Image 1 (cartoon, one colour):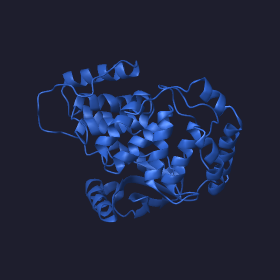
Image 2 (cartoon, rainbow, N blue to C red):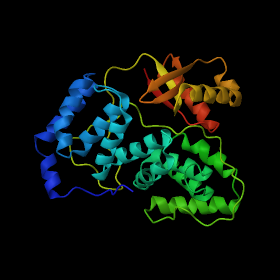
Image 3 (cartoon, rainbow, N blue to C red):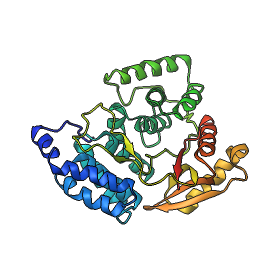
Image 4 (tube, rainbow, N blue to C red):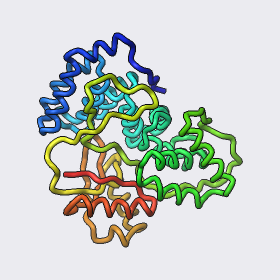
Length: 317
């Protein structure tokens, strides 16, 4: 598991030097659409150990903006930022690994980020644990993590909590609530509880969501200590003219097309007649619906899909 720890005095002094100014300058360039200039600005502070700069370079390599897309290099930067206590990097490390199919490897950073207060990581970990998808199957703990994601403000977690709860007994729901309360209080919770084996009743949740595509660390300061939230997101460039609802990321177009067919069959009233988009990025194919005319339409569609237990998020193009 990545060891999240606060920076020592030497690290604080180092990050307070002009390297921090370079990190902020990189964010300014990224927001202006100068991705190559942002990457250049982040190189020196990243080499000096600036967790925000490392995280931002990870984002650039994941998106292929300013540099060739390379998920392995992105993961390396996320790992290095995570080792310096960067919560968003730890979450992105786990989520990216999970979507790449490296689910067992994803569990440690997902758990670390979820316990540190990242709603996205809690949600993905909850789905995986509830279903036994790369994790030891534990419906009570899975529901607890999704409930924790809801408490942390992740909108699509609410409908999923209701759907999961309907599959569990009253006693299991009560235990899940108690476990969620323990998670919120920062008390240790066992990853695998001993439960009588029974057939899986996992929700058809669909692919796990990923971080917002344009999210970069805005703050040129030491990374947050474990348990603190990530720095505010900065979105580059002008407001996009088209919007898409992203439904997941798959290892190839064939898998994405199969997923689309299954989704249409399950939610024909919401998806029939809508156009799928297969967007290759970094070895994965992102399944999207769109383009939609404005963000409100995309948000409304995503909310209706989430209410049926199908995770999604809105992205601009």
